[in-house]
Image 1: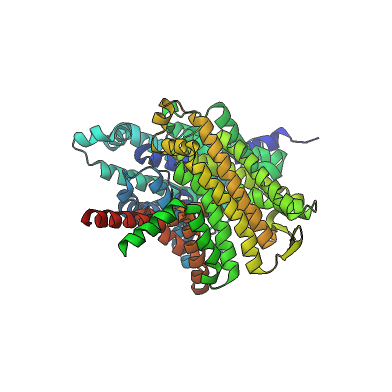
Image 2 (image 1 turned 120 degrees about the vertical axis):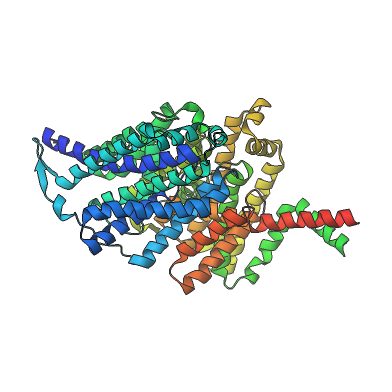
Length: 294
Length: 327
């Protein structure tokens, strides 16, 4: 008989939410890019990995976590901008499979560039000094860094939501994802909007890599399983939906954490089974529109 | 001179199976060593199976490693744990991969387009984790070892399977059967239906074809061919690496198919040959093979989406058109 105390259950739930926060960030980036450009970024896991490497590297040089928190998304976003401009853009209008294939090739290149730059072993990562230790949550002690992870994700999601819903640029992005043709007619250069959105998506991917780095091993292959897992989140939440990405991200994180508590050997499997069940019952995902898939 | 060339090309295109098999018959003598030819033959078949779905039906699956891997593992498990003869192991592998194809296909064809690619990738990873965890049967992380088939016993003759050239021609027989079968499928009315689905799914449905059933059937056929390639690979390597189930292995089929030319009969073999030959050369020069293949692949996606064989066929047709116009 399994012996799980309520305290252990609550702590594991928090661990799941912290893991889910990373999933949610990844899925938001994927969904944002897909909603605008109808491109599935197969290099998303690679951008996550690049973010983790640059984060550890910048932290080593500057010694300031907050500074690298600012620098990493700028760097991965810049890489994303270059990739969109010179690699993805020539493929618009040539069928939806081509950008997907291209980003798959891009992920191979990014992995080997990191191997070349930082070696095949990866880098040792550590929790930033200011966020070490644990805090008491009433039902037990929880690592401070994971609490920070949840808070940071909430802040990023909120900022993104305000940007998309309340600003002029956000208005253009929303209009562009509904009908790019009309936006163009209104005199807005839609290709610059697409460029910006791809940059934001990859910046968030890099940021999530940086945030996840202290909780896992940083090596060139770390983005490979993450890509499959973020696809699970996107399918469960519904493609192109930001609330879907957040809800499904948290759910997948919690399912993973709870399965590791009850039956650790099935933890990886559980989230994929969750996706299969969602596909059977609601193929478009929680928040997806049925027409989006055709 | 041109007239004879025209006739030769027309003959080769009319008898595509015979032309392909004739080339593959002498292929080992063009390669630096036999193990590479065996590898190309097996991965060519894997890419051919994948091409049936991607090139001819227009469904980009990222989960085909599941079928290659299940074929390999079932052939391996029946040989290692049950002591089955080689032919029964091949049958078991093909049957199992077709069955897995039926289950994954049933779930995946509920989605379309890019969604389909993501879903097949994720469903394929389920198979990866299941075989990874069932280490009592599969050897887990280390892969399944000891798939020993030393002799292919046929009535009246026993072939030494350890000799690489013998190995090549034993596998060649299965590839020949698969290519003949594929050609029959493609030139049947069903073959016309799947190409109609690729061109316009709604129109095919409006014409009264059961699109969902056709898609599921072609998915299972494609899985079965990839499973056959997997069984042959298990017999060839005598081990089954766990990586053969990973989605990066699915990506390899995608790359080979695109490099050669999707939707062409012989393109996947060209793609497999180029990919594996390049891998052989590049890994001797540098350890950054992934980066090199990534760049090559991106160049093809950007500039030669028809692939090597597809571009060649296209140029040939244009040239024939010009010659025909001038005559």
